[in-house]
Image 1 (cartoon, rainbow, N blue to C red):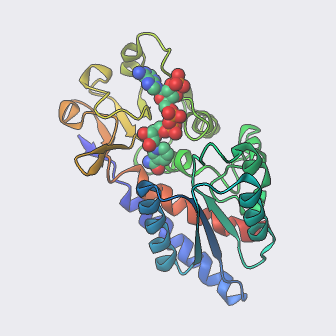
Image 2: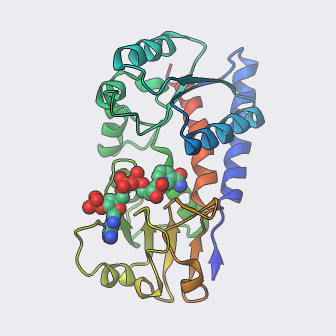
Image 3: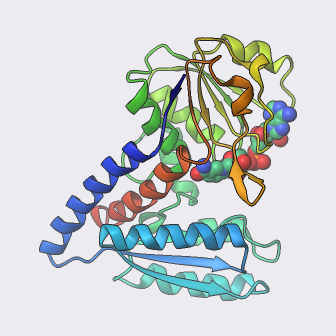
Length: 279
Ligand code: NAP
């Protein structure tokens, strides 16, 4: 069974990003990311630290702002407006989900489409749904596509099942994979006989958010699995697939940790650079 690790893909992206940053610097442009976090969720803080570390490695400036958990929509929008107008900032990352007290739709509409490094503005999602895969793309779905292109190669005609229909993962990923001419099926919690569907697929992308949900009954020896799930386990994280149960019984899997996550955080930085290209 092959392990489709994220690191080789992340390292290639890192080198590409560093080259582009260096070219921008020669033109006097210093790329900069602003990170806006509301509250002190430990998972958000851990991701923020990873992003800031990657910014240092890639020579991208970063500014992180922690907002109080009870910040109002108005105050948050005013802060965001400042970063939208700040010409030294090329990308903005806002941690989601935002607390109930903040109008998330208003925030998504307010973030400058050019600086929308996590692809939350509907303008950027619209572009993708219209078949335009240039520029800013949602990081997690794009990480899945990058991993598949690296390890599988051409996806033309591949039968790909995505078990997730969220706007963060399943729906945009389906659009990206259709652009690769794959045959895409989206499954969700109301899907009947899920294992019959996944077992027949060439590639299964799992994103249900339940540890060890997918055992060997969901796959066959030909199955290629990209596990996107992140679930807490014994102080660490684990994916949606029961790795012990499927080990040796499928063709390959991208593990959690060590798979999609590393690629996702690099793609966020690539999106910051698109903010410069499109400015
Ligand atoms: P979400 O909005 O809760 O979506 C979960 C999806 O799983 C929904 O479409 C849901 O169906 C489906 N589902 C739940 N139970 C199911 C079942 N028994 N059978 C079939 N489908 C089922 O979560 P999300 O934001 O998309 O995130 C999904 C997972 O990806 C989470 O574990 C999250 O932590 C992880 N994630 C990873 C990254 C990364 O970079 N690696 C980034 C973002 C998210 P319904 O629509 O019918 O409810």
